[in-house]
Image (cartoon, protein in one colour):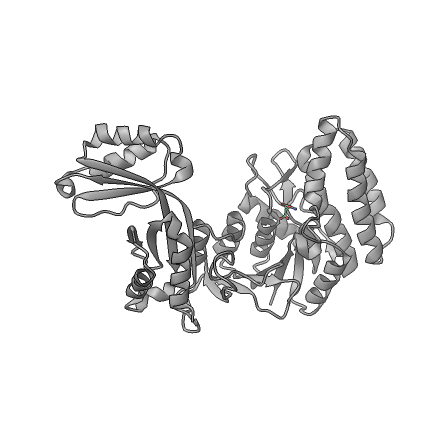
Length: 437
Ligand code: ASP
């Protein structure tokens, strides 16, 4: 067995957290490659080291005082080093970094130093090799991972390291300059390392015990999802559930490596396991999760004989394309068709869009409603259990919620309903209570 473990910002925020990760790493010999973030928040109002580096660079460029910010960063790392019992490497590293910044190093270099310094410290503390991500992880100019090149480089390098700590979040661009991923990008580094060593599992250690079946701001104490497929996760995250960095999932998924979300503060909890294969035999509930968003507009078009008119849907799609708007859903009836669109894409242009539809499609009537909420109920298990949709709809009916739109994908992975934005929370609650007892 071989495991890659990535520890996020709060898991490596200070020496106490780093002691926890030592116990986690030492509890399982298979955890051989460790990817770390920069120190994150230690308490609610704390600052992430990455944010401090951004602030430092901003102030420097604006000729505002920056020494104090540098002092905070320095003190944090020195305190961490002392508490972990290491001696004297970080001070020198910080001096080198300061000098390089004064010599005009780039923003990407500066903000990547949180990960770099943390990885140096943690490698020493764990007794693992430190392997720099520089020159190994390759990024495009837009900050996306070059998966093939990164894996090739990592493969060569990691051969000679039985156990290593690798800093997340950055690599190099094609000119050999340090380049960072978008925020939260250490997840991507972890997935690339996991794909490189063909890990049996990619553990993503954070401060929650995995994904929840519904938004805890709407449902009190929602159940945890213990196992979910990549596809289900994609549906939930598309509909607004906050999950992993999209790009982080890709390299692991492509290499068929399960991802396990775990909690550094509660290692006994098995967390959420994300896999490619569907295994519903052990599932407690028919559904995996519920997610949604309130910010949709629905444009409904009525035209007699619409169902026999050729090219109607194509023309509608072309109008949307002209406006650079993605058609989220197109539910249709015999003589009606609706276009469900994201509000952010429609804002300020609704009248213009309606006028265009009127002139191109000559409908008998158009109605627009900017207060549509969409709720996706997701789960492979729904596909082979008759009556799931009926249960869902009757739960909504019992709670006096009018369904404005229904869309069940042919994959039967989800049932999507549109309700009035003001019914959003009530509808999620009704669905959750129906399926999770
Ligand atoms: N430290 C970086 C950030 O705060 C990257 C990461 O933690 O994944 O966004």
